Image 1 (cartoon, one colour):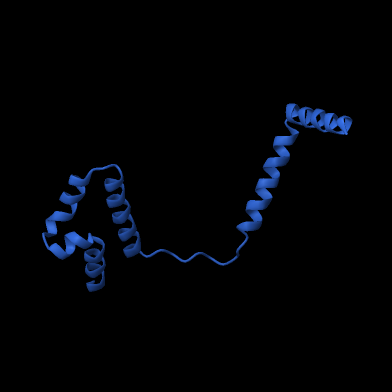
Image 2: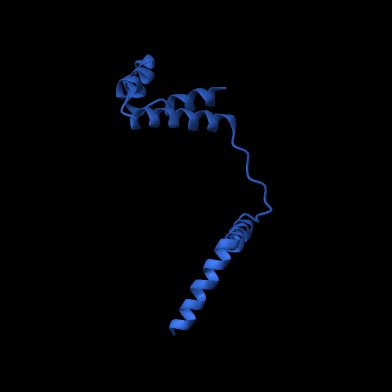
Length: 100
């Protein structure tokens, strides 16, 4: 059993030194990703309204994450409506986009 393990280790080491093992791993990863991403259906286009909402949410989330609470409050505060401040900008943006 030791001889088989030693042979496996020597073969693995030789293939790694020559770069063959990394090439095989890369080809395998590529084949797996191609198989997983092989859907012929086109992906739906994200509307401009959704992009705006997503970007605004990401900005507010980031400000909260890096502990810039005052900046977040100032960003939300120009609307000065308690409802808007408590819910954030997303409902306001959605309502503005629906009016257009």
